Image (tube, rainbow, N blue to C red; front, side):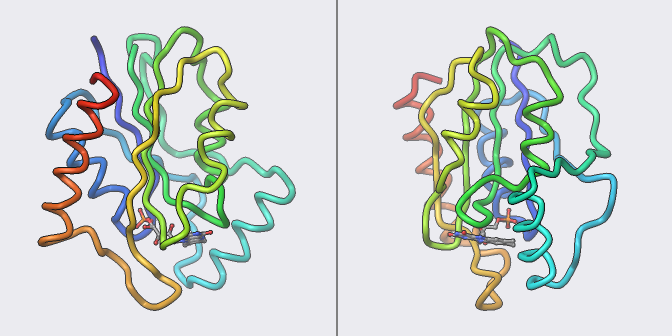
Length: 170
Ligand SMILES: Cc1cc2nc3c(=O)[nH]c(=O)nc-3n(C[C@H](O)[C@H](O)[C@H](O)COP(=O)(O)O)c2cc1C
């Protein structure tokens, strides 16, 4: 089965989880990047994201997935932004045809969980099968904590990844 692991990450936490998953399931690992660079300032990103979410703006992606049809299993990783998906991930979900594919979501958050992420994925791609999400605590940029999934925390998350993959039969 051909596997794609795609993720969006600003401060590296979702990327760290994506890499841990990749080490266990293999496949192609791809970072989603927007065509226009994002604000480096945290407050500016919070404001821009909220505006995009409220207005349903879909930022164009620089990242192109070639031969998307070949993938049967697609793992999608995103941080929680304003208790929902960053709009760049919505761009990804609405760009490709997920009919008949299996989607496996994963998430990092700053303490409040994955919010509406799973509902948003299911609404955007109702022709796919969505398996249960892995959601783990990542950074808290609001408090100056960027990459948190390192060292012992990373080892603990690796174990969570193994248990989750087993539970969902992957
Ligand atoms: C614009 C923005 C909005 C965020 N909103 C939330 C939120 O609503 N709830 C939450 O728990 N964490 C929130 N966070 C924290 C991130 O979800 C958390 O730091 C995550 O681990 C970041 O992942 P990354 O390092 O892959 O970018 C927000 C972070 C940013 C930058």
